[in-house]
Image (cartoon, rainbow, N blue to C red):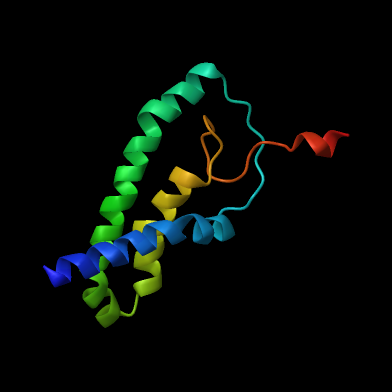
Length: 110
């Protein structure tokens, strides 16, 4: 029971830090103008699925941690299993197709 609580706490900590880590990896600028249907589909279908993939990836990362440490690729495993799905979940404008802050700020045009 104690191991389950520790693993859950570790996974929750990883999930909370995903958006900060992903923002540093995926900060390239891409302008997109998604429509209503793209935004609704993203909100209702894609984001919940990506959140589930991020949670499963975080759990897989925790399980694979001893093997990744033995192989010397903890960073690559964390990036592929947690950061990339997290970036697609949290660091993407609603309805956009690629990660990154793709919407222009209104103040830039003034």
